[in-house]
Every structure is written in structure tokens, then in C-alpha cells.
Length: 152
Image 1 (cartoon, helix red, strand yellow):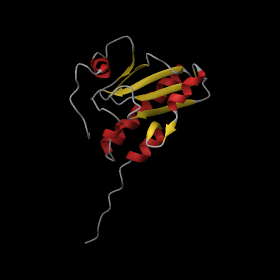
Image 2: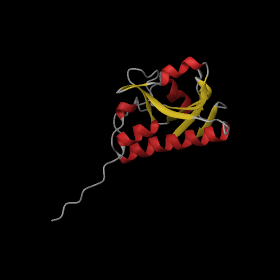
Image 3: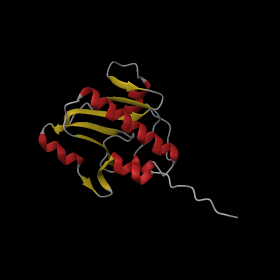
Image 4: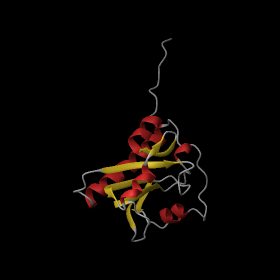
């Protein structure tokens, strides 16, 4: 994947991902780990992070493997919220873009609303190329282009 760097001991999400036997882990597989946000902004607020260290959304490109990873992250987040907050009327899934991301390890925010407290919704507003980007919108940005076959 583009922009990958080796995980460091100082990356809090790398530490969580490599210690995936913890009882705080909601989901773990060979690609991602999911856990509760330690500072939740909604009724249910989970983070889904790749096991492999990828700093931010800016490090992903229109590549099949990047698209597949983000799709998997979203699928895991949806599955967890449907399981844990089935009566919620609204869910949100997305990423903070630099410089407004809090941790330099890609993480998908998965929230079952309402926001708690209500003012927390401000953290999840989109400011164009800054701010929060919805997961579905981001997937459109990195969707691989179809290969064009030229006739000889």
C-alpha cells in the first residue's frame, strides 16, 4: 500500500492492533482490529484500524488493495454497529483528514448516533479537503479506474 511505514512502538493504534487478544477488542482479523473509542462522541463510537501501519487517508490511492482495505474496514464497522446498536436510527462512518486527525494511524470512526454530548457533531463536519470525510465518499475517491484495453 502506498505510504506505509513500519509500525513504531510509539503508535498507540499499532500497539492495540498487535495486542489483539485484549478484552477491549471488538473484532480482529488479519487486516483490521476494532475497539471502542476511548473518548466517545456518540451513543456507540468504535474505531476500525488496519493492522498494518498506514498513517492517514492521504496515504491511500486508487489501488485495488487500498479500496479493498477501506471497504473491509467499513463492512466491519457496519457489522459491529448493527450488532451492538440495532435500534439506532442513524449511523456515521468516516475519517478525519490531516491536519485534523488525532492519531497518525488510519482509523475509521463508526458511530451510532445521537452524538453525546450534542456539540460533538462539530468534530465530524466536512470542510472540503480538510475535516471529516464520509467513508462512502472516500471509497469513491479511491475506487480503482477500470482498465482500458487498446485494440491493436
